[in-house]
Length: 130
Image 1 (spheres, one colour):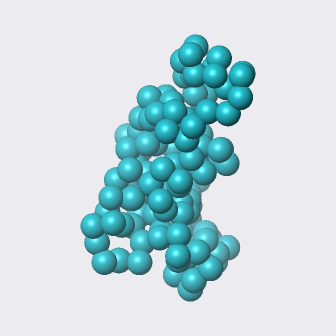
Image 2: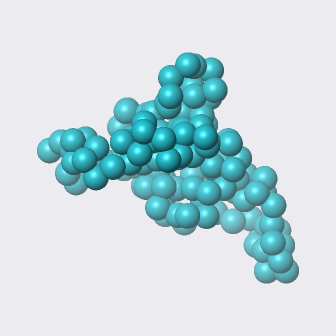
């Protein structure tokens, strides 16, 4: 799944750098499901008292799953979303997106979440082909 880049934004990119706001707007329009998931966990993190917020609901269909995987697999998309929302994103399986405060990076909870042990413990047969 590729980003749907408006002609004007592509022309600006050809001339030089584009702003994070322009880039995130392109992501929001191209990958609306992925943007909504990250937006939601970021809002849950800000409004709660938990150390992190995460999405445990599988995508509604393969198109949504593709959007989420595209966003999480791209360093530039993921980084743009992290800067936009002021969070650190962690990702497990095909849909478990978590939002952490930037200050949590390197801490016990974040380190445990991104560990190989956590990845192994969060596997299940129904997620094998996602």
